[in-house]
Amino acid sequence: MYQLNWDLDSIYQGGVNGADFQQHLAEFKEMLQQFTQTMQALADRALDENIFPAVTQALDAYQTLLSRQLTLDLFVNAWAADNYGNPIYRPIQVQLEQLAAQLTEPEQILQRLLGSMPEPVFQVFVEEPAIGPIKFAVQEMRSAAQRLLAPATEQLFNQMQLDGLSAWSSHYETLVGGLTLTYVDEFNQERTISAGQAVNEIDGYPDAKVRAHIMQAYEQMWAQVEDLAADTLNHLAGARLTEQHAHHEMDFLTEPLRLNRMSKAALDMMWQVVEEHQTMFKPYFKRRAELLGVTELGWQDQTAPLGALGNYQAQKMSYDETAQLIIENFAKYSPKMAQFAQNAFEKQWIEAQNRPGKQPGGWMESVPDLQESRIFLTFTGSPNDAATIAHELGHGFHTEVLKDLPYLRNNYAMNVAETASTFAELVVNDANVQNAQSDAERVALLDAKLANPVAMFMNINARYRFERQFYQERQAGYVPASRLNEMMEAAQKAAFQGVLTTWHPHFWASKLHFYADDVPFYNFPYTFGYLFSLGIYTWAKQQPNFEAAYIELLQDTAAMTTEELALKHLHVDLTQPDFWEQGVKAIQADLDEYLTLSAQFVK
Image (cartoon, rainbow, N blue to C red; front, side, top):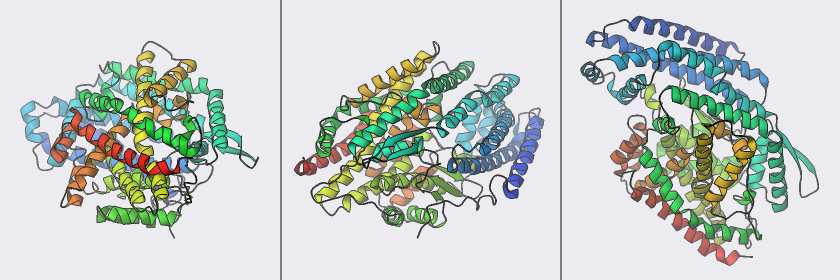
């Protein structure tokens, strides 16, 4: 049997206070000091071809530092997620944040050095055999130099982030860690749950009245701390806008587009196609209400289990059954992908236990020093859980195929990061549907599969609408909680096209993604990744050797822009509607099948 808890001791024995972690932390500090001295010495060297070996060595040292830094970060954050709200981890996280801030000084010296090379010299340098595999990353570092302010100013910004952008993001996690709510279940038993558990119950509690009660209590819980959440969001966004403006990025979308290596034209085209087709989900929501036996759908009913359909009653899957389903169906597309998944289960790279005290949500992070991954989620046995595990394993496989490449080739953008994960999720969702033993089971599994495009076209679109409006207004001053509630509800109504009758105005407060300090606009990459993966899924079925072609695509994700990646591997133009419309057609086919098969079960 596979274990539901992950193994962190295989990374560093003895936890964050153990000798193993402390030794590697001390080594990182020493490596950082040496790298800083090296870069300070290089800053005064002549920028001709004689400097090439020294810069190459500096890039190697820089990548080693990044690998160790991510390994240390993952270890501490994993323990903190496992014991959410435990204050013992925060001082260590702050220490690592301070070290990360110290790394930016030599990192920026390296960027300035690359940026100062005369163009002919730089072009010779990037064609060096040792630089070829990371040529794109080196070119990005050269471009980054053009945005840098004076060294003393940059150092000040880096230090102020610790008590600014990063601090407000951390403050939010502290705020969430102490929140609980109480509700009464269908057996008249009073239950108290954490904020993270509440999200799971809102998504999947089978009793409609209790589900609505939990949703109401969840809104009330956030209303009690809405001013604290509003302060946090406003100050985080204010710090980000200040830094963007100082670096001459006056449009708040410039940074997220740059980080995702995509153009505004591609982003706008994606949203144009999405918003043109949001109405296609109206018949689906109408049918969902009929199957649930209700006249109206509230926010909490979007993914609610359908319950009995004819003689069919949804069955929970065991963790072992879920693992086997994933491994077997990954193997149909890629034996290497299946082997990676099997390793993750066998070697306990996944934390899946359903218990209080865990961080809400799920994630995957790599452990680059060990060339492994760790995955965090909560398993309840639903078909959606199988898709969630597959999603995170897809992220892990993406990292797996890059492990023999230089570390800078791991620096793929969030939008393409969501491609591998969503592709893996599609594989498992389709397998669930194809394995159905009856029309009723097929309807239930199609319903679970359709939750994903609904989220991408509606929920994520609402987040984007809200965040764009919020940043527009934040530029003019503080946006109070009451206004944030208004904006969120308006965004949800626009995105959901009237299919719901109750809303989640405090969603801006409850969603961790709005409070990320490292990735602004942590929303549109999900919709991009979903639609891009639909294209890959169609493409996969046409490839005589899909595995090799897929791995080649993943290995290129940090070696070119998103548009270049799509053109090279899929032969499509992301600034035109054709590619995005292809994804819409695939979704429509599932909707049509769902509506046809489910008609017989209408109550």
